[in-house]
Image (cartoon, rainbow, N blue to C red; front, side):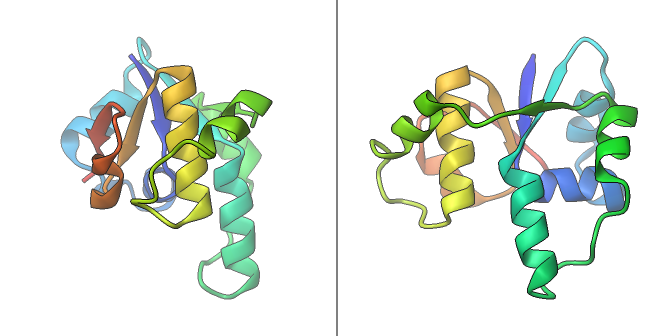
Length: 126
């Protein structure tokens, strides 16, 4: 299975794994699964850290490597897909994650109920 973590699921997996459901934690640890992290997530974390809304995550690149999470860049097709999304969700970071999930045909790991309104595969994070 190909999984794309939303930012909250990424933070939980690194800083508070107990917040993840057992099924989500097992899926992230299963080496048969490909776990992706969009570059949107470190960007969102950096912005929210600068605004004092989040604590910084130390050695993010090292932690991603250690957990064998792969970075997913933003492509032109991802950016273009955002234009065609219904406006169920206004968060630009989440909208990009939704577009990436559609374009890449991956399952988005999230606990965000609004995202369920989009026609993508969802794996509950909590």
